[in-house]
Every structure is written in structure tokens, then in C-alpha cells.
Length: 280
Image (cartoon, rainbow, N blue to C red; front, side, top):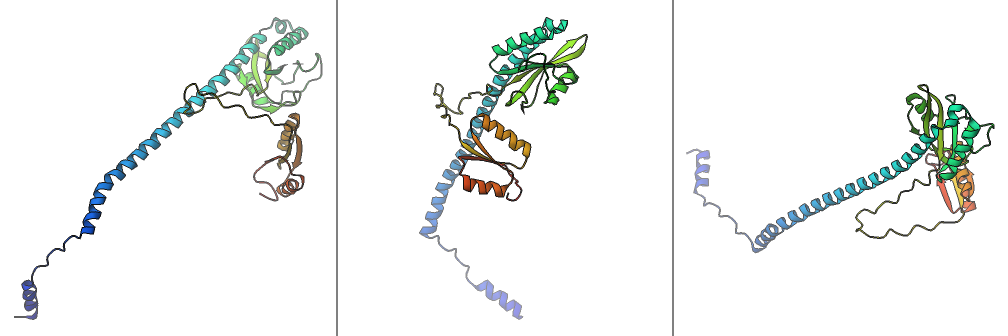
């Protein structure tokens, strides 16, 4: 018998190993895991369902808020466009009596608390009537040309971007309608609107029906405000807007001077641009 055969025979003669008995501790651990795993799975499922429900509630509330905002703004803009379109049909424009039209437009502006002025301009953009100045008088050209050119191209009403008005001396935006004669746009009639009336009170998400709205925040008095902005036009516009609201404005054009002014002058608030030269 070879050595390999003897080794195989010896292994075959050994008794089979018996399985090790399970200890009480291992049994309890398995029993605990078997009990806890369904509970953990149920808790995870519940957390996922709750997160999905919270997400759906938030999305539904956001949609409701957006719809309320769009509806309210659309209603206010539609009112301005309707009044302006009626003014565009004035017989004084047909007869060319701009003095009589000026008087009529001034009465309309006086009846609209959200309008700052009304202006009339031919396609060149040079204003010929503006109720903020006596007629006739020297007037500036239209500043916000995007909506003006859109009215000329489409012969349809348009709403312009917010700008700092050269005559109103505040932030405003135009609502424009065409004055069409013989199939062409002879004038563009614009109402310059203040943005403040476009403040919409929205319901709180998840608030029970009938829950009163929170009290409005108190109106603060004049403050010292530091404006740090490297763009000269933007800094000047912010400064003028804040000064018109009664605040004292400090201006700096870079980060290092802005920090020095903040430390030395101790403003109540600061409006700081990002990406400033000298100190980001």
C-alpha cells in the first residue's frame, strides 16, 4: 500500500465531526434580530412615506403660493393695461391736440394710486408728453427700450423691466400699449408704475383654515447703511434708493475700504457685493 493510500484510509477511519451546539447567547441574538428586523423595516418604510408626504405637501403649498402670486400680479397688470388701452383711444390723440391729451392723462394718473406718471413717445423714443412735466417742455428719451421696441414690433401691450426713473427719481417699471393709426404704431403710450403695490399676502403652508396671519414686522426708522459695491452705477442706484427712504448711506468701492469703514463707522446694516476687489 502506498503512502497516499494509507493516508486516505486513515482519514476515512476518523469519526465524523459533530456540529457545534448553538449557545444560548447566539440563540437570543438570532431571536432578537428576527423580532427587530420587521420593526426596523417598518420604521424605514414609514420614514420614507412621511418624507414623500412632506415633499408633496411642500410642493402643493409652493404651487398654491405661486398661483396666488401670479394671479394677483396678473390682475393688477391687467387693470393697468385696460386703463391705458382706453386712454390710447383718446380723441385728442386722433386730432393731435396734445395739450388736451396731457390734461386728460393727468386726470387718469391722479385717479391711479399705483401710477407715477404717463408718457407718450413716437417710435423714435423721444417723449413728447409726460405728466410729471408741464406741456410743452423738454423731456428725456425712453430709458427702458426693450419693452418699448417690443411694442413697436408686435403692436401689443408689454411690461418693461424695473429701472431707476430719471424723472420719478425712484425704482419703477413701465406698462406700455400701442397707439395704432392706419395700421401702424404711431405712438407708444406708457404708464410708469411703482412696484410697491405688487405686494401679495400669501397663506402659510400647512396653516389651519382660519389661522390669523402674523402681525407685520415693525417699520424701522432711518438707519446708517454701508454699501460696498465695486460697480459704480449699481452702488449709486442703491445709495439713492436708500437715501430716498430716509437712510444715511456710506459708500465704499472695494473690500478693504469697506471693512475699514465698517470697523470705524459702525453702520446699522451693510449691503455687500460678492467678488470685491482687494478682499473677497
